[in-house]
Length: 235
Ligand SMILES: NC(=O)c1ccc[n+]([C@@H]2O[C@H](COP(=O)([O-])OP(=O)(O)OC[C@H]3O[C@@H](n4cnc5c(N)ncnc54)[C@H](OP(=O)(O)O)[C@@H]3O)[C@@H](O)[C@H]2O)c1
Image 1 (cartoon, rainbow, N blue to C red):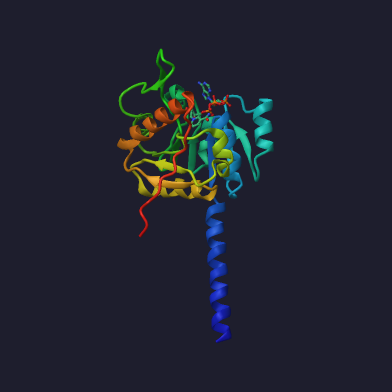
Image 2: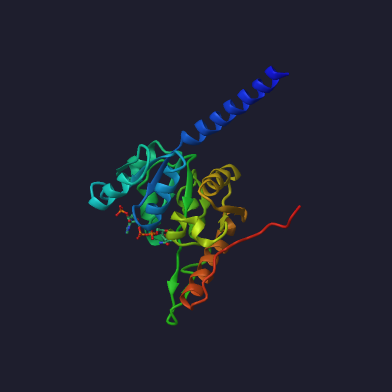
């Protein structure tokens, strides 16, 4: 009996080791070195992933400082070089630079392309509005048809990305994308750093999540800030 117990403990340990090995194996290219990159890069490095920042100026002191405070084998290089060996790419760039940035990344076939961008125009009343019909996530999927685009992380501040516990509960990351396996990869990353996730469906629903940013940002502007805590019905 004892050997059965020992064998099952051993297999559990092996399984956990295997899962850890799988998790640790990913290289994540973070394109951009601003607020979102500086939050998600170090956070995902903390899960054991290797982070490569893609910057227009990888030698800049602020970029090197970001590399230094990112655990593991972090480095910075040009964007196209950063994505080359990465299975996951985070497009942490201004929404209106996304087309040009994606065009410069080269072959994105099969890569998970996490899109946190928030297109918006600011009206005369100071409120955010859609910048165009549809969503940036859909446009990015069109610009990179072989990539597996996942909308995520656009409905919160970069500060919250870096410190999920500061919201006082597990904030929900809304996901949209056409590839369920890619959404599962992003969900695992988000949940790994302390968020909950909810699948909003294919990428054609990303405009809803981008709209969630608009009302969330407007509420912050008008002094009624909130965070998205979604709850599934109990079984
Ligand atoms: N800030 C937030 O709290 C927040 C929250 C949710 C979503 N978002 C969205 O996430 C995206 C990134 O936001 P962020 O606040 O991290 O932006 P940011 O601080 O302005 O950083 C954007 C980075 O993109 C890179 N970049 C590449 N092409 C660029 C170009 N043509 N012009 C300017 N920068 C360029 C730059 O890195 P290099 O100079 O190193 O190339 C820059 O550091 C945005 O689309 C934003 O809407 C932001």
